[in-house]
Amino acid sequence: LQFLLRDGKILQNPAKELEGLRKEKTILYDEKTIMEVRVEVNEGFDLVLEEINVTGSSFQISMGGQMLFRYENGTAEIGFPGVTGAGRKVRKAQINELRNIRFLVDTSAAEIYLNDGETVFSTRYYPDREDLLLKIQGGKFKGNLWNLRRMRFTK
Image 1 (cartoon, rainbow, N blue to C red):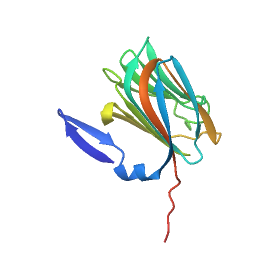
Image 2: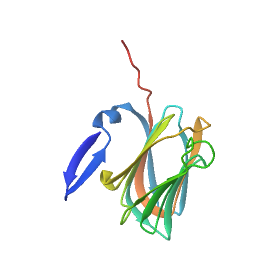
Image 3: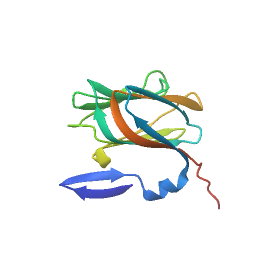
């Protein structure tokens, strides 16, 4: 993790070295209400959405029904239907607005960085499939999605 102090707030962000695991990039730009893209979770992915403009009452990202991020009325939450949360159901945080979001997801963990790291969710996550349909709805945004290479450890 990297820590930064800005305007009296501690911001948390993933280590820059993780960007070295990025593979092919998919550019996401949405002026519609719903965008769908298939992601591979067997190796992990890095999703960055910027310039988010929530249109309507909520903005949400669904990961194939395995995990749901939702921002609504000043509350950000992640929810886990079924067994993917291993007993966890919902986690919430109060934020004034949603400007940007970064999802780092692999086969057993998810980290969600909101508003340049002002608010961070970190959780274990156990999807039951190797690929998921990522569905983003409720706002306009610009973003990128990268599949990630697996980390290899050597002696």
